[in-house]
Length: 401
Image (cartoon, rainbow, N blue to C red):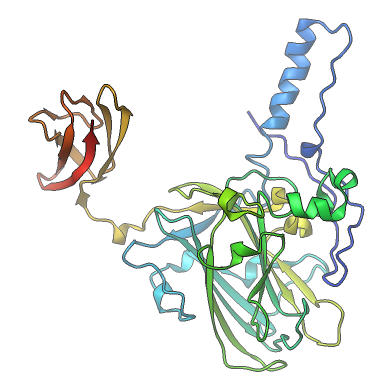
């Protein structure tokens, strides 16, 4: 079924005046179903139920630039970037992963970018098993503006929605604003299901970013880390390197103990976008350009307008031609019932499982019942199409009572 994509009105934001402006709300967050008097079952089946399905299927596909799925590079676990502001760890990332200034549009003035004034290159990475997004942001600029202690600063603004929940996450777009009031809305709803980071590029004498919500712990270790590398002063031209990682959250409230990290898995699509806020005059009240990857200015507060990014598998050069891998789930401890799942890499011709109790199986994903308690060493040996073999065992991981 095709999802119903609802577009809300565009608002313009002044960084020096965060008072809410009246912005049309997305219909997705104002769904009220009232019973129809004396309606027949046929009307319910033919009108109301299909409409409800359309509405509730919206959020998973409500994204901007759906014809452009950007890629997030998977780092091998032995090649995770060190956050030191150096670019050498990123040399293994193919050029096809780079998102440059040519993808950005000044959505306030309709200009195309002049690379002599501002030239940006962004690479995004991830590591299987870690719920982190890694970024390398490189920018050349003819005038860097970062002398003030407030929000007036060259900024790399990022929004991430790790579970594609979509919809508004910033107070001025929330339908409950009139009920809760501005600051209760901010404390309870801002950045909760999608997160906005205003990252200062660069920063001196102030924090590295403004996490645009009350959950300020989310921008520090163990949830984020960063490093800069540059050699220029305010008002000068130069090259900036910003390297950082962040943790995306499905839910992030003021208490970190209640936070739910977004689980990052291979081939998953997440919502992500950014803008470069280009300041050129310390005496100006606002930026001179808002260079946006999204084609909707209000991506900063509505996750429906983020771009699709795909968590890519390892590039072929990092894959072994044949490697045995597996995991398991204890389905029923009382019955000692265990399900084994093959995760081997390569063209597999056959599997041989040794369960550690003198029992074996040649199924790819067997389910095995142990007759007695104990700690088991389980071995999987795979045979490739060319006759080669590879073995992987887990020692006492499978322990049953």
